[in-house]
Each structure stands twice: as C-alpha cells, then as structure tokens.
Image (tube, rainbow, N blue to C red; front, side, top):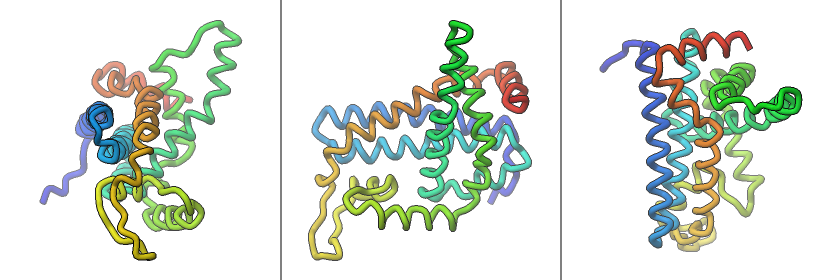
Length: 220
C-alpha cells in the first residue's frame, strides 16, 4: 500500500481530472436524459457533483499543504463530498455582492480567473478542511436533513434511489422511476457548479497561472 503524501503537482492533476470527469458525467447524464433514462441521468449528475467536490478538495489541499490530510482523508464518504459542494455554493452566494460592486465601480466584470480567486479565498475563510475532516458532523447533518425533508431526498440518498430498487418501511416497493422527474434539476445544478468554477481547469493546468493564483488567494 502506498502511504506517501501527495505533492502539490499530484494534487493538481487529481483535481484537474476530477473536474474533467465531472464535465464528462454531466454530458453522459444529459445523453441519458434525452434517451429515456432519466433516473440514471439523475444518478450520474449527482456523481458529477461529487467529483466536482473532490476537485475543490484536492485544489484546496494543493493550496494548503499543512491541511492536506484533513481535506482528502474523508473523500470516500458521500456526505463529506456533498458538504464540500455546499461550501462551494455558499462561497458563490457570499461573494456575489462584491462582484456586483466591482462592476458598478469600474464598469468591468471580474475575469473568470479573478472570480475563482475570490471564491477560493472565501473557501479558505470557511475552513473547508475542518468541514471535510468532520465525518461525524457530516453524518449528523444528513441525519437531521432526512428528518426535515419529509418529501425530498438529500443528494446521497437521491443517488441511491436513482440506482436501486428497495422496499420502504411501509412495505412499498420503490423503483428508480420515482426520481425521474428530478433528473433535469440535478443536471442543471451540476452545470451551475461547473460554470461558476469554470476557470479551475486553466488554473490547475498551467504552472505560471497556478503560482499567481496561490499568491492572490493567500493575499485576499
């Protein structure tokens, strides 16, 4: 078993491949949805969201070598990946006012790379490493969510519902057909994340751009 600690280059490659895989899963989900396999499409879109979350976690680990273990050691758990994605969503919402003010004051929109810097600076403020490391907290969060969402399924459960047949506690046979209507919203949700963080591929792939990105994020 290889127990070596991933270096920055390896983490960047992993993040890039996860982000690329999220794009592929989006495309495949769209193809399935257009050809009568809506439930499977929903499942693939959720898998794509989880791959997106891993891309964020690996990127942050490359930025923060001292927090690397906390960021990546729990990525096998779906609950953790969905909480990382929630942090990525919150970062976009929290920084929107700043981007609007920048446009109003300068007449220019921030570039995709500048937007990414703003988002990652916000993710650092959120201390996503602590979120990713807290498996117990993630499980408890989704346990509470299941109780609150009596007529909906949180992401990890929705993915399973889109793939498997089971019997409910009430004795009802449940098939993936029950989530077919949710495929479009799951695909659009994944597309939203990929659009908001679109510059990540360029930043991860180019050494000079990455080095500048690190400096700017840590200065923000």
